[in-house]
Length: 315
Image (cartoon, rainbow, N blue to C red; front, side, top):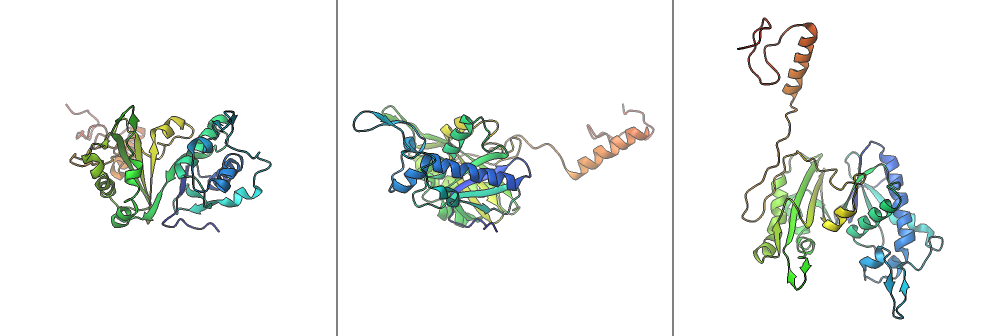
């Protein structure tokens, strides 16, 4: 039986585009296990707490003698065959969504895992995980209450909003917040966004961070999954590695109303969602039925103008 996600977990939140959850879980497990065996098993065993992005990504580095050597010193056949036991899948309680984490002391950060997975799928032509829609690195899992989120995010927001260096000058880190709630109608987006912005206020006042909704350097994702809150940050370089098949924006509706608030800034609303209310659906059904019967209805579905009952259009 798959165990549920618990507060304190770190890993990757995987959402599937279809209802084939079992197939997606199996393929994600195989991909993560194979990825660990080929690229990161020796780093997991001997890194001793030191994480080097170039080594984790398999980039060639120069040793003391000046010659180039690869990151991995073990071939896939020489890697530990129990890599699959390191990868655990947990139930989120939300349809088509599951949580993947690696139970190793020297495991890399979730962002590095997603980088590796994106690089792998790009080289293989997006064949490794065909039924997965999005991958989100998750650094914080807590209860879906603002007081719990405020405590859990205290040490992470400043680490996520590290100002990039531009020559000898430090540029402010541009960031945005994306919010989505599933299986929980009581939470409000602006409450959790306010929590993040309160932690970012010291950086904003010092000019080290600012809100940019068009071209952010970092996007902080907040996923409410029932009674749990999952948060993580995605840098811009990870967006360049994504693809239409593995779209990191796939879970965020473009036309959904999202409230984004920063220190001293008003709320900004996106385009309103098209009206799909129950009354609108009934109205369209009534109109189509009337057209088939050759009769007219009392209300016009396009502009809501009162029409005559005899079928003559209004003046």
